[in-house]
Length: 158
Image (cartoon, rainbow, N blue to C red; front, side, top):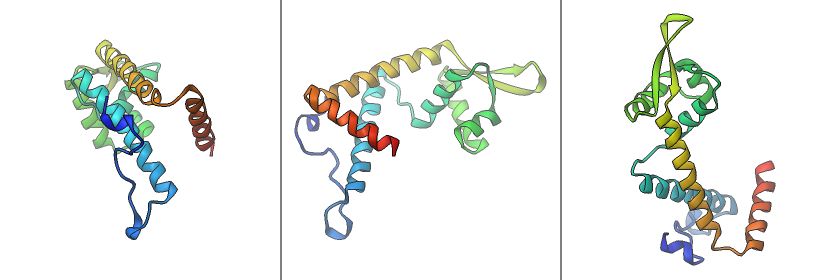
C-alpha cells in the first residue's frame, strides 16, 4: 500500500488558486480523483494490464447487455464518437476481452460481445478494486467509515 495512505497528508496537494488555499470544491475533486486513480492503478498493476476508464466502461456496458451490440449502439450508450468506440473495441478485441460477430439480422453489420476472458477480467478487476478500496477505508475507524459513507451518500444525491 502507498505510504501516503498512512498519514494525514494528501498524495496530491490541493491546487491553490492565485497563491491562496484551494476551495473545498477543488480539494474535494482532487481527493476523489486521487483515491480513484490510485485504486485503479493498484488493481491494474496487480493484474499486469493497465485498463483505461474508457475500456472499463466498454466492458461493463457489454456485461450489462442482454445481447451483442452494434458499434453505433455502444457509441450512443457510452456517449462517445463512433471512431472512438472503434478504437476501444479494437484494443479490447486485441486483448481478447470482446469479439466481433456477424449480425444475423443484417449481413453487412457487425455486433460486439464480451468474451469469457472479458468477464473474467471484469471480475478480477472488481475484486482488486474492492481490495484497494477496503485498504483505504481501513485507515479509518468503523465509525469514521460510516460517517464518510453517509456524507458521500448525501453529496451523491445532490
